[in-house]
Image (tube, rainbow, N blue to C red; front, side):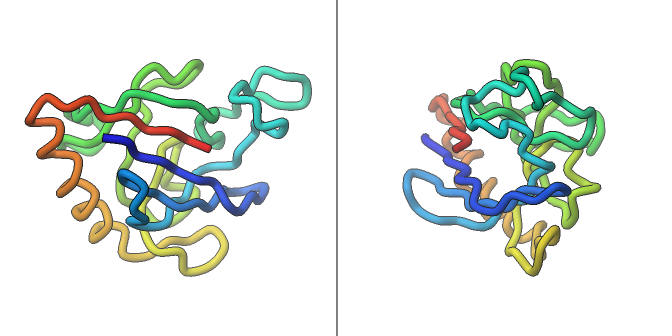
Length: 143
């Protein structure tokens, strides 16, 4: 299974994008600020850099698994092997303050806000959970 986040709007406080599953649009996304200003998948270049809890993960392709989240107390999609990041999840939430480096799902309402996040999280899980249970590899590409 291939999941893709296509970043569309870039602001100092957040990044808005769209999420696709096997090339089909599912919902909008909200992330922290994209600090990969030259878009090379590396935030260690001059003028870039990670700010804890306020930085979107670098562009790239990652494996996605389902794991128990200590923070949320439930099984959530976890993005593996993100250089310089740990515990990166896809979860529900509405504002940049709730991202903490993770990807939020929802319907964009306005700059810095998505709505119906729990609904879209459930829809997302309807796709990924059966694939995971069947042993299918799930990959997330962030562009």
